Length: 143
Image (tube, rainbow, N blue to C red):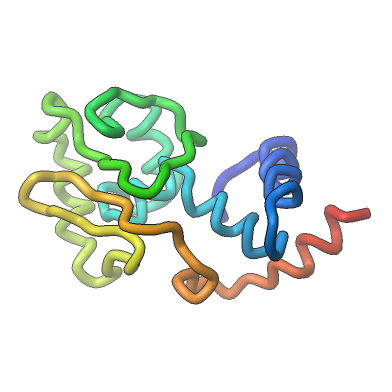
């Protein structure tokens, strides 16, 4: 779902396992915090793959600095904005128009007119509506 290789996913699992709390929930929160996913969740992209593509091509800035690493982990209070040169990119504007039917998660705030979003908080398990059984993932990787 998140477009990661097995090695990348395993590294995220190890990071989630080291954190306090429920490993499965920690894993999902880490995956949701990736920049390519946040770009998708804010509606700047129609899919996570397209979000990854946009991030790699320097279309976004985090807190005023260009970031082209899709796996960059956002933090609470981070501001994700469309680069000034990229504000006329048709695909980004089309994605924003299609965003109306999908909606923005509660943990994010979209300022559509300014083409930017703010991370209000980290996502919690209830915010993630995907049908996923993270316990099965934890059991598989804990072997």
